[in-house]
Image 1: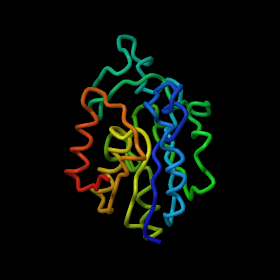
Image 2: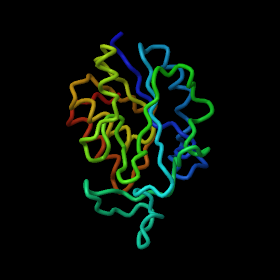
Image 3: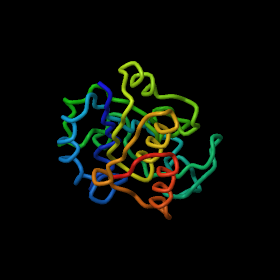
Image 4: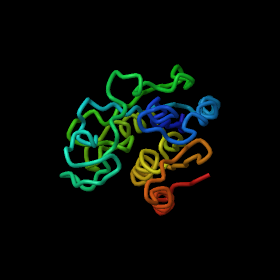
Length: 198
């Protein structure tokens, strides 16, 4: 029991037709389902924002979606309202096999701070509890898939590598937003952190 599949934010709002749709975001679902049987554990992460979250552009009178603002914890992209708790947009994609999940990690529920990573909120200090769960299970190797490659998958993979896990990202089972060069920067960051991209 040493290998976990971490499925990042495969939710309706990140798929075509969603509030923050990633191009072809739904094209990875069947491949992710097929991979679940090869892992000792499956963890799903779920973006789970309260209405009026501080990372929403609509919460800032003078800001538009995709602008960057400064928060107490650093630079923050302001997003369209998305993955609001209990909404259809926050639900997992209907084809994603949730029955295989050993654990679901919800993140981004603190109204004052965003959370891209499966391991830490964007202050890089407040843990989600995922590390403790994986350590308790004796898991050392992680395969990461999901949405979006250049934000939540990237931050999760880099954090996991820094924590000492053996991390690979399956590029064929991710899709990216690619906002102002974010995809190139994410690939560089993951490679520098020691993440295997394949």
